[in-house]
Image (cartoon, rainbow, N blue to C red; front, top):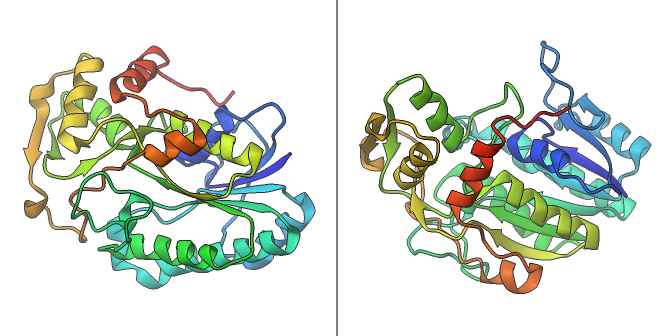
Length: 300
């Protein structure tokens, strides 16, 4: 089974490679940089700007993947709000190009959407709830979801909740690693106390996605952890598990943070995930303990 993973150096793209099944023949791509990768990835990888349609088509034609797992995106809510044309070119236009290639080559397309498609007015969002994003990032992901709903391409739509885990060495921090790094340096860190999520580890997300890929499962799925938590709750639990000083965590309200609009509550109902994919959501403490047990996940 040949699999193309976009965003190979991102948190999820990296963990998908670490947890790849033995039958997966993988190529990943990542955003080009002037600097070489600090560490080799687990599978062959190449720099590729997914907005370069000609190069993407060439890679697709040469590799002829059975599955595309599309994790690459402009994922910063604030950046997308301030750079809408560029965000559109990556999150919408480049994704539509991949969908077109998958349709023409009979390739199964797994799209990573976001919890930001919801407006956050109620807790435990279900797949059947009407999406209503409050920022451009969420709107860009919803545009792809809506296109896939009316397209003939074989596809899976995954809406991940707030993800955490050890990133690719040198990669961007997530909420948990940001807290760990700050507290280990005895640096105070401001954390929102009034936005709610269903945090989920990148390891768990990867296992769910590989299950969908192996069986080419179609549909729309919310994937999250077992607990509705604020960022402050998650940060306190991280400090407790890693035996760091929680007094360095400074609670702040989203009302006092100048930023793009954000949904207040994007916690998930994971009933469909459990009933149709047979994955039970994991407690956050268990995944944090696993992170502590394996302090660095090497790509070697």
